[in-house]
Amino acid sequence: MRSLWILHRLGFTVKHRPRSSSSRGGGLALVYREDLKATDIDVGAASDQFEQLAVNLSVRSLPILVVVIYRRPAAVTGSFCDALSDVCESLLAFKHSFTLCGDFNCPRDNGTGINAAVADIFTRYNMTQHVDLATHNSGHTLDLMVTSDDDNILSARPSVKSL
Image 1 (cartoon, rainbow, N blue to C red):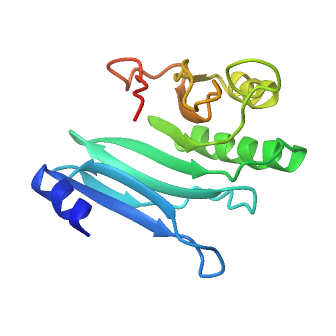
Image 2 (cartoon, rainbow, N blue to C red; image 1 turned 90 degrees about the vertical axis):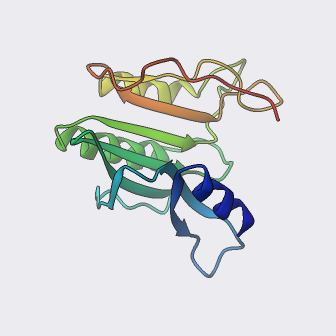
Image 3 (cartoon, helix red, strand yellow; image 1 turned 45 degrees about the vertical axis):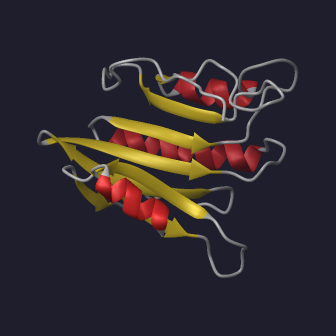
């Protein structure tokens, strides 16, 4: 609770979706400036392949859809790729700016970067994955930030900092 108090004192608030009672701890959270209007939104495409939290943020009266995803570490399967494709298709149907972000746990099989099948999904839907550095100590990129190729909602490339 102390961390929420600190965030509030710094001008931020949190949207949180706890994990179901059948799982231990955790859940999803989106931390955003408290002067932004945030509304939970249903992007459809619910899946047993990953957890998701979708929030519509109003930034200077412009809507930006933020979808946070957490996927447990596992092999990338056809079922996961189908579910991710469904989310991408839903995002494009909203017809306004979006970012798809979170811990996808989809490392490339050999080397750095993201899994080739996941990268192919983003390419098919004309999306750009902006995190190009390792986000895991073994050199993998597990945490992603994806936007439409046509969008300029990021003012700078995401940076990665070690803790």
